[in-house]
Length: 271
Ligand code: ADP
Ligand code: ASP
Ligand code: MG
Image 1 (cartoon, helix red, strand yellow):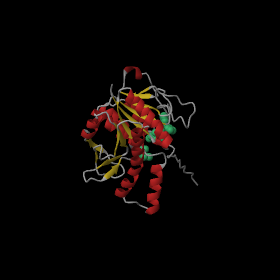
Image 2 (cartoon, helix red, strand yellow):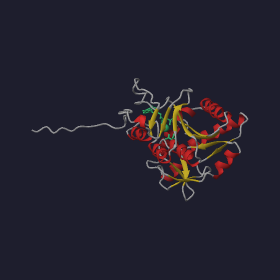
Image 3 (cartoon, rainbow, N blue to C red):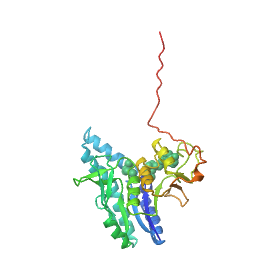
C-alpha cells in the first residue's frame, strides 16, 4: 500500500468518455489499496480557446483576470471527474489550487510554487478520499488565483507528490512514455525505459514538451520518482529517476526539436 499521485493531461480528459476512462484508472489504483491524489489538466484545446477569448476581449488582457479565466479549464475537469467517481460509489472530492494549499509567488501567468500547505489533503487521504486537484493553478499571498505557465499541471503533480511524500508521480499522457525523439514527428523514435532527471531535463529544455521543464527541475530537486505513461493502455512507460551507474553508458538519450524556432542565415554578398 502506498500513495500515488496520478496526473492526466488534456487529451486524457478531452471529453466525458475520456474522463470516465480516467475514473477507471484511478479506481483501479485505489482498489489495489493505494491512496490516490489525482491532478488534472483542462480538456485539450480549452486553455487555447480561453486565451483566444481573452485576446478577442482585449489586445492585452489584464494578467490577473487572465489567470482567473485560465484556471476555469482545470476547475471544470476536476469537478467532472469527482462527480463521476462519486457516482460510482467512491469517496472523492475536487480541490482547486487554493483549497489544496498551493501557495505561489505573485507573478501572474508563470507563478512559481513557494509552498504547499498539505494539512487538508493529508486529512482527506487518511479518510480514504480520492482527491482530485485542479492542476496549473495556485494562489498568492494576496489571495489571488495564479497560474503556473503552459503545461503547468505537470509541476502541480510533482509538487504535490513531493509535499505528500508520494511513492510515485504518474504522468498519464497521450504517448507511451518518453521517446528518443517526438514519436509524432519521427515514427522510428524508440521508447526509453529509464532516464535520469538530468537527461530528461535536457530533453525538456530542448523542446520535448512531454514534461514541463519546471516539473523535471522540481522532481530532481526533491527526488520524486516519475512514471510517464499512456492513459490509453496499461503498458509500462518511462521511469524518470536518479542517475545510476548503468545509465552512464548511454551517450545520447534522445533528440529533440522545437517547431517554433527557425534558423535564418544571413549571407553578405560583396558588390
Ligand atoms: P499532456 O496534454 O498529456 O500534458 P503534452 O501534449 O503536453 O501532453 O505532451 C505529450 C506530447 O509530447 C506527445 O503527444 C508528443 O507529441 C510530445 N513529445 C515531444 N517530444 C517527446 C518525446 N521525446 N517523447 C514523448 N513525447 C514527446
Ligand atoms: N491547461 C494548461 C495548458 O494547456 C496546463 C496544462 O495542461 O498542464 O497549458
Ligand atoms: Mg503537457
